Image (tube, rainbow, N blue to C red; front, top):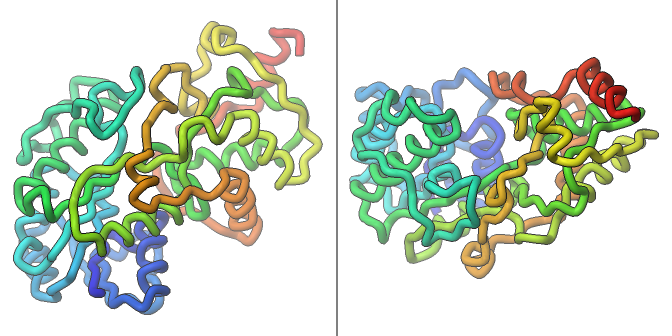
Length: 339
């Protein structure tokens, strides 16, 4: 099996490349070489997907049975379209990592693959949809990118993977690392909402394995990539963070309405906390039936802590700074509530 990984040097792209090499596949990666290091055993191709000449040179390095595109988060649909057109003659299948944000109803309603998508043309530029919220803008751009790939390759040659929150070793966003470091600090921990609230993060290694499996399948289609609804809870997650760090911390659960009253930013200031009814209501039964296997969240927590303790450092990314409540603000909220 010959595959091309768009990206391939950090987090999901790296996990895909590492697992593909471990399977004995011939793996090429395409990146600018500015973030992360190449996985041993891959054939790196340097270039910028916004540069026509670089895309042409990439195509000359083919052919490949499949491309797995993990690096398009910061690119407009028209950039993805140009890349798809350059690769169409030399690639058999296109596996594209999209997002649940591409659904019009996220995070306000339960979702399945039949849910309506946001609308964007295949050749949309980076300004398209910017008048909405950041999450809606991101989803609109990804929906346009999905359309760009399908219009170029045809639906039968395209696999669209729509994950929600991806955690695990190498995470660059900072959600799980923040909670682990907060747990390690100990003391009274401000815990958000209801401990029985179910959550659906998926391990980066499980997403990578599923992407590789779908690259070898004979059909296309869209798949929501998330842990099963109802299996994991916020309480179980935070308890696991305390346990693996060996901290003598104590969780103080604050109701949603109290946190909202104090202006705590959902999703970022206390990572993974969100009151919207559809945030953790993503139906992934289709992916499960197709072979997605999601390890227990406690295992992801433990492995991420081991990675951090071993000196693991994520690729620098601006989203890291968005996550986590300051110790001073956490203390002030707890004190105001008599905790």
